[in-house]
Length: 531
Image (tube, rainbow, N blue to C red):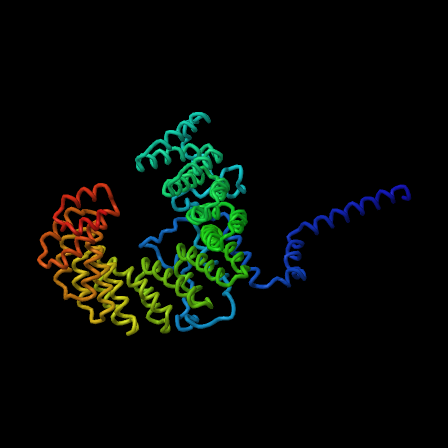
């Protein structure tokens, strides 16, 4: 009996161990673990932080789709249960103490999802694959077809050939060709040498721009930035900072912002930063907003909030409208609200105009009404005019109607011009006639000038005549001079001769000089123009 006791004890110990293991891994054990109280760290987490994490998680793995609003899409996207705030309760035109929380509007926008990351305007928005974070890498099939390599000697001979060209068109065409080669081969040394050798600023500007485009298409924004900085030209930096910032911000916003801070000139810094934030917000709305919220300069922050809001509006104009209603700065609010409502109107005109009709009076309402009215005019001018007449404030109704006529003139310039001439407000009528006849002159300058000549001899007629003749003098100067030849008022005729001839000389000096010499322009005017 005593010899068997240790075996019994061992057996019991083994069974006890098996029981404990079974208990720990049984469903009951899991259920008990699931019902454990949250840790102090979990209890300390606020509801806002949880929502932010949800938004961030939702944003991951969802690239940005087309920034275009489709006419047949719902203004609410997938958020059918998203309740609209009443404009009167939203704080439009009312002061607020702080920048509004982005969680709900941005979460709504991101929950709609996006498609593939598209290129930024004019360039492919991606750097070299080796420079990218893994999430930003793109397929090598997106690369441009390689240009056959040129030797150093061939490039320098090409540069010498360009320097010898006297015709501006041929020279700029050759510069474009060279920029493609140098951009794909990332030859910054010869590119800088080329820029330094160009004596005409137009050539410098064209070559710099083409080099930047080529380098961005080669997925190399850092080299584009380096090239422009090497020039030391404030004007070249200003002209290209936005394009570089827009492309780089979609790839690596932090690196792009570090570059923008080195530009020195405040205007260039702001231009690049705005472009970076916009393209950043297109693909990472919450990340861009979080950075903007920390910007100490209030004016710059307001500008950047507009960029974030515009990026939101491209995908979800309804959420952008609601968020804009919470902004403290009136100018920022007006700019973003009007833009978002215009995009909303493309989707649902009735909903957008209904929102505006409920907004409290003030600058934001009038600017938004103007933007939506212009959008509506592209599809139904009569309906837009009727709505503006009923909804706009008395002090702004005619100014808005004048802008409506300007948009209308792109489709029916003669009808729009004749209608705007009936406006009772003199300032709106003058501006409306100017803009509609200028648009008319682009398609039928003779008819536009003929109609302008029938107007009463006032400021509206004078301004419209000058704008139509300048446009005509650029596009068909000989026909414009022939029309002036037929005028009966000799004093007015001399004024019109000078307008047309001066415009012709500004566009094509050599051809104009010969044409003017052989024209019926009086000798004293010819001498004045050709001296």
